[in-house]
Image (cartoon, rainbow, N blue to C red; front, side, top):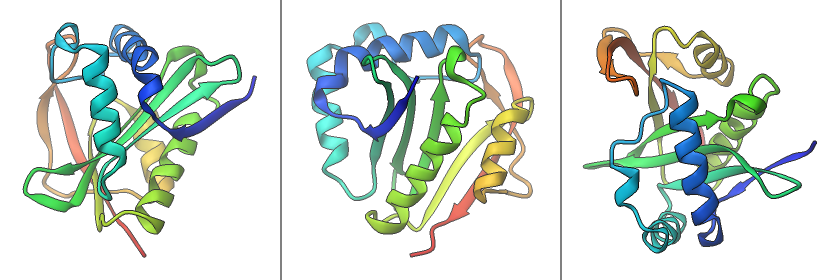
Length: 170
């Protein structure tokens, strides 16, 4: 089955909400800070529109030829640091292990290099997430020395994590 990576649009709002709920159910590394039950579909559609009109934020989705959303990648400008974007990538279990996360990361990097005003991308990864660390390193992200910390996972447990960064070459 073919999967396509493209920018999210407002028509994705309902399916995106379903995808986010599924990702939270399947993974203890995928965390959404706000209560998803409090977000209306119209609000999510408006948020997608706003994100996609900026030069330092983007949301990508991975969609099958049948229309199912199976992955999500985003870059969001850090508060007070408009040239630094925090990224996140997640793929549902049934589609992991086929290079989709790497393809979405490559799209984020291409966006950062050719369109965005972002100069650096950063992320926090749980130490136990070896597969994600491998993908990030393969793309070129470097571990930030001294960034080790404890983060709350979706099971509400404190787990070790660290930051990684990638300087955007224009």
